[in-house]
Image (cartoon, rainbow, N blue to C red):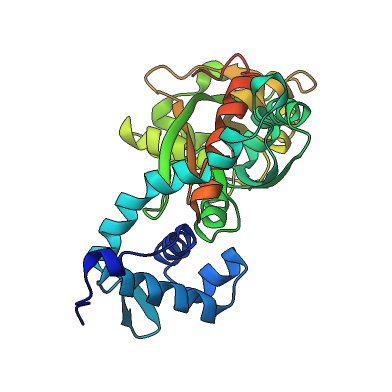
Length: 315
């Protein structure tokens, strides 16, 4: 029902109520928001009710066991994110810090696809930790689909994947660009490899859900060719390179993985004319509160500034 109190009297709500509202809006569940915010479900429900009363609008509608944000709630979320983020940064902006740069503190949970976790992140994360010893970082490694699921389920704060992204409930942005590389065993007749007849060769591939596999198959399809069947499936790029080096067949892996693993594994690099194997790497997150969004933005900037970019990784 409409709130008939004067505007000046009823527009009294807190930043914490907005944070709780944002968490419920993004998770779609009071229970999940309560878990994320370490509050009771009753406290979350009360904060939402008080905010709705202060604004004089309905914020959520129940459909069975699910709740959906109203049009007013979606408008509020869009309008509130920027000022919430600015307010959350006030303590760190006002606090004195040695050397003129604020020290990051807190916990970052990062979900990364395995190639990024193994070949791209280690040096950069080590340097971030050296500059910010109060920052705790936990990395979850898996394939791209698993990394997306962790972020969507709020089990990770940020995701870095080889893509292509499959979900529409995450904030997704281009991060860097990598190049895939087809490899062959030593002594293999690479002159006999033709795009139109890739199925004449044995192939080693990543598992379904892998960004590397998805990009390879999509780029083949865009070029008008059929992806060859996988005869051996391994969920680790380094292990694939080792298998190819021992004669298991051809494979398409990240150029980063191929370059580093080839130092100790004899393989051949195969050029397939007419096939583009460049691929974007994606950054995604689904922040639950304004304060975590602020920390994530600063962490992302620090990581990008300190990351050792391998030769094949281009901004």
